[in-house]
Amino acid sequence: MSGRDVLAGSVRGQGRRVAVGAVLGCVHQLGEALVPVLIGVVVDQAVAGRDAGRLVLWLAVLAVLYVCLSWSFRLGARAGERAAEEAAHTLRLAIVRRVLDPRGGAESDRLAGELANVATEDAKRVGAVNMALMSGIWAVAGLTVSAVALLLTSVPLGLIVLLGTPVLLWLGHLLSKPLERRSEAEQDRAAAAAGVAADLVAGLRVLKGLGAQRSAVERYRRTSGDSLAATLRAARAEAWQTGLVLTLTGAFIALIAWVGGRLALDGSLSLGQLVSAVGLALFLVGPLETFAWVNADLAQGRASAARIADVLSAGPAVVGGDEPVPAGVRGEVRLRGVRLGGLDGVDLDVPAGRLTGIAVSDPACAEALLECLGREADPRAGTVELDGVPLSRLDPAALRAAVLVAAHDAALFEGSLAANVAPEEEAVSGGPGPRTERAMAAADADEVARCLPHGTATEVGEGGRSLSGGQRQRVLLARALRAEPPVLVVHDPTTAVDAVTEARIAQGLKEIRQGRTTVVVTNSPALLAVADRVVFLDGGRVRAEGTHGELARTQEAYRTAVLA
Image (tube, rainbow, N blue to C red; front, side):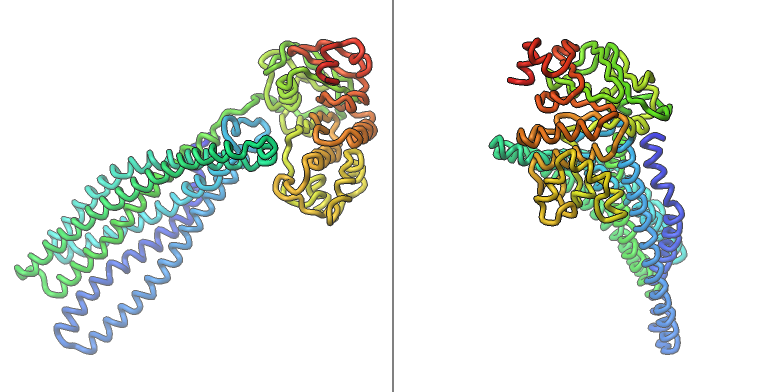
């Protein structure tokens, strides 16, 4: 289903609520239009004739009418608001599903903050289209009832409304075009500012360490300034549009009042009919102002819809692959002639059930290798196989349950330490079980828990901000080990810990993964020393294989990359 289909479905899906709200709104508009008509009747039949009985009767009718007005508006507005919120909720779920799709692609060239802005503000604006459509139907009903009432009162007044309203609507549509363009630019700038802010917050500790806070603040100030300027331009466009529409509306109402006054002076209208005509003309201000608001909401909704459609229609990062992972995964991984990023025709065999270390002279090779093994991207050339089956044939979601790639910069979530390591276990039992305890001990994360005030129940904060870099790494490694996948690929899991802790983690990793395929992409001597076999990638190709000791003795480039 395309992005535009999802957008259309989010509006159509609320059709029943919008229809109910529209009917109730039309009842409300009918009652609103009847008020000046009944007041005119009261003037002619009760006030002018000084008939107290009729005055009481018509006042009672007006009281009943106002009760109906109150309830019809409440129920209609409730249906419309619910339709808007439900549609926005549906869109948010669709955006999140697209972002989390195993085949990826939605996050390409977009910061996390930008995607969050699309899923919140843009979804809200598109959802509000339901309310705008319903309000537009209300306004049409109000204008129609007023035109009929004016026709029955005076043919010239009714014709003015019938002929003048389409012209006003057309002019309002033309005036909404600049607002639509500037609203889209406003949302683009706001999303960019949100993305930069999220990016800076995520890297705040690194920025402080580099002493780059000033340049980071300047970067955000420029982006935020662009967002402010775009917002002001959109606000000016909306103000101009609203002001011009109100001016046209005022001129239209003045024309109706002037014609009605002339007809009254000529004797074509009674006093009560003149009061009704003027009251209906004033009532028309509401529907016409509603049209101005509806035009503005539709313009903003169209701009936001285009941004949501871009995300939902983004092409996948990897294509194809719908076969299930074969039962009983042995864990043998093989690369043949793989070219991607820094990899230049890599041939690599990872035997099942062994701990393989991969050292690189270029970090780009490590990133490309992780993308291939996790199927975040398919190689430009060559193949990657799991137990002899090309990864391109396997369903990405099923594949990632069999081959877990634990990146060094993976995120921790707001919640307790236990919830980050084993969320399902923490939710059920309230504490770590034996499997979790083994994983935490192997990653030395149990020592982290002992240092925290409430142990594994301690809240780590958003992104694990209450933990140090080394503590976060150990919790992330414990989470990966706790999953017990057939094939585990970890990337630089110990760059922020001391040498003694790193040695403990290396030994714990080897013991807990005994008999399972494990790949450690790192230049850490401690981790490479416990590997059954080490592969050295240099210049995008496999340059040497052997144990850590053998490579350290015989390969100068390896010594430079690992021991320097």
